[in-house]
Image (tube, rainbow, N blue to C red; front, top):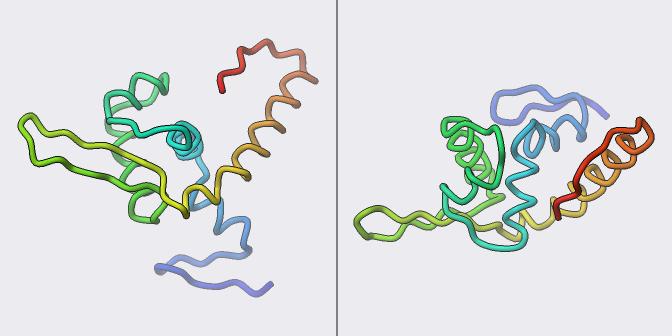
Length: 118
């Protein structure tokens, strides 16, 4: 496949393009949680260990800009913001599930103990 340019960035294949949208340490865990229910910022922060406020904000903004999640702001004081998955975001869930299951299989083969959180 020939390389292509999207948003002033050169991509060499569709896998690279897809991973740029949902890859990295935090995007898939965020989408995975939003598949089941709507979360507020603080709830996501509490549910995803080790993520900083700044990183969570950055990842949420990127996912929103790409159309994978929706951000709903309520006009109340103090501010209330909720995050939900979009139809586009739902299309990534089977891919995330496959990668997750593969990771769990690799961990098991290597003898790595883990707790599975659905």
